[in-house]
Image (cartoon, rainbow, N blue to C red; front, side, top):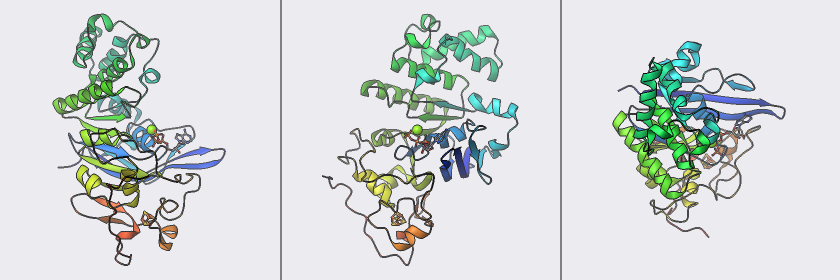
Amino acid sequence: MNPILSVNHLRVSFHTYAGEVKAVRDVSFDLEEGEALAIVGESGCGKSVTAKAVMGLIHGGNTEIKEGSQILYRGEDILKYTPRQMQHYKGGECAIVFQDALASLNPTMRVDRQIMENLMIHKHMSRREAAEEAVHMLKLVGIPDPEKRAREYPHQFSGGMRQRVMIAIAFACAPKILICDEPTTALDVTIQEQILDLIRELQKTHHTSVILITHDLGVVANMARRVLVMYSGMVVECGSLEDIFYRPRHPYTWALIRSVPRLDLQNKQSLSNIPGAPPDLLCPPAGCPFCTRCDYCMDICREQMPEVTSFGEGHQAACWLHHPLAPHVEMPDLTEVKA
Ligand SMILES: Nc1ncnc2c1ncn2[C@@H]1O[C@H](COP(=O)(O)OP(=O)(O)OP(=O)(O)O)[C@@H](O)[C@H]1O
Ligand code: SF4
Ligand SMILES: [Mg+2]
């Protein structure tokens, strides 16, 4: 079956006074219909920029999507869409839920209007039909007393309820792809779980393909079937959930998993305490981006970008350790607790 989305060699730069920030340096992945794919990696590794590019939100100003990048939606490159095709795609075919609902919602517009707008544009509903559907959507995402709340403004909702409103807006036009960029980071644990349950339920019933961006490996374990590990604007490893958690092949993934206090996947785990810092995206190393922090770094790592090695069933890692001429290195014990 053809993937619904195929991102090929995506490269995105920001031109700043300091120079060219190479935020996304070569990202390729497929998203199958109905699947949930997680993107993980430390802050600044290019997760949100990748998500925004897929959503068609990167254009103009100081941004540049490099020649050779492709974002194929059902085989057609969205980077070549006409403005009209793009309008249909955004919201109608692909929708995004950000972490900060308050910043993403229009503070001066009642929430029903914000849902109705999408329905009138994408589903060509009349005002009356759209108003009924808006209430239905608010009910679907679990907002109590939806008829009354539909007429309220974003600031009148709690953080969790606002996130539900965002999900209602995103799902209103039954998009084929839903991108969730840290959708629950700002919420407390109980609300977080409710929101994730809601996304999972809607994903199943609507057969939506989901890209989930998160720092939380517990969320990854509960939501995703496949995982992309990003580092410094690149995908360094990808594979099934089991590949990434139990058979990781890249030293950065090893560090990520070891950096959490316990390998109990039910625990909340954050990707925060790997010693050292990622490279400066203004002048990244010529070779492996992880070479400045990697315990296994060899001369070639600093000089040449590692080749991608496939381990079967879509599991791939970009690391020189898998080259036939590299010394043999055993995967470290990832259950070992770091001091
Ligand atoms: N408008 C911009 N101008 C210049 N640099 C930018 C711009 N937007 C993003 N960047 C840079 O691009 C890089 C990738 O940013 P991105 O927001 O994708 O990171 P992220 O992986 O989502 O991080 P986080 O986990 O903190 O959300 C960062 O180094 C960031 O500083
Ligand atoms: S390519 Fe070299 S520096 Fe990069 S992760 Fe592999 S061993 Fe480490
Ligand atoms: Mg981000």
